[in-house]
Image 1 (cartoon, rainbow, N blue to C red):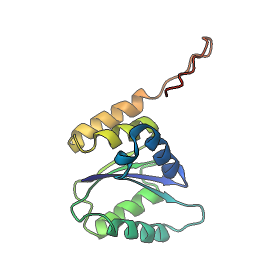
Image 2 (cartoon, rainbow, N blue to C red; image 1 turned 60 degrees about the horizontal axis):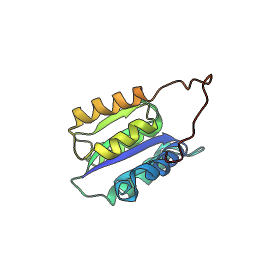
Image 3 (cartoon, one colour; image 1 turned 120 degrees about the vertical axis):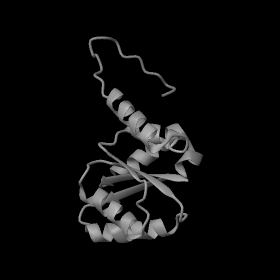
Length: 144
């Protein structure tokens, strides 16, 4: 099984996970894990917390990591912890996560190869960046 790790500074990953559940449903979210480096928390403490989470997952679990920033302490700590426990094989890591990217990965991670998933997630992330034309009346869709 592939797990989606949402990794961020602060509560961004937790909030994103909560929003994803509104769109993807509870069953999909069973394989989504939010990991955030809290203000004032050391990277080593985050590593300890993540180690405990990792210990609860199957030994053959695979991971897709979406991070707020490539190279940030949360991502490097999570990756180093995976590596320490010999769980970093075939991991896909993408930075600059946004909602569209996370939703795409959450829904497609078990059906696509990492290469296909990477291409689809990046395309969705880029396509989500749009400007709202404010000179037109805005219609609110209650279903979204």
